[in-house]
Amino acid sequence: MTGNWQNWGDKRYADILYRRTRGELPEIESSKAVARRIKAIWASGDTIRDVGCGAGHYLVSLRRELGSRLDYCGVDHLQHHIELARKAFENDPHVRFELADLYKLPYANSSFDIVTCNNLLQNLPALREPLCELMRVARRALVMTTPISFARCILTIRSSMPLASHSNTIFTPHSPDNALSFGAAYAS
Ligand SMILES: C[S@@+](CC[C@H](N)C(=O)[O-])C[C@H]1O[C@@H](n2cnc3c(N)ncnc32)[C@H](O)[C@@H]1O
Image (cartoon, rainbow, N blue to C red; front, side, top):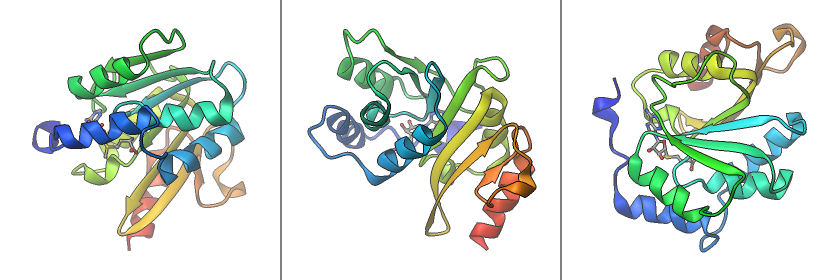
């Protein structure tokens, strides 16, 4: 499925991600925004999976907001990105990076308290399949930021909250239709 969408392999882009992770380039606004959004729902001990993590630069923002001992694992489908992320955090016992494809995450249902996936979905041919996969592995919340139709949308999809009682950026879990209809409305 992802075969046509392997346009991430540019080494110069990877180098920018790596330099961000190392603090040689500034944090991007979306990683700061996502870290703040996660902080609002995070409880001590929560596990965080960052799908499409690149070289791990969101961890810099997350640690600034949540402290250095958070249980974080970054996931990316490019070996090169995972190697850079591991290099940037080598000898750091509190972080892991794993090679995996968003379309087939090798994790059981509801494996992680909070899943985040940023600036990735807009480049995929369709939303439903990857969104379902992200929601499948998230136990409590999925936090995403992504540009849709030239606008930026940051949304939290989370469990145990009736859809009707929240703003239109919060959706019930395991019901991607809610999020998809939001995406469609946003893009129209
Ligand atoms: C535009 S970058 C975004 C990086 C970071 N999340 C951010 O917001 O700056 C997209 C990342 O997703 C990864 N990616 C693309 N397709 C993927 C897939 N099918 N499974 C896992 N990661 C994927 C790319 O390798 C790249 O690191």
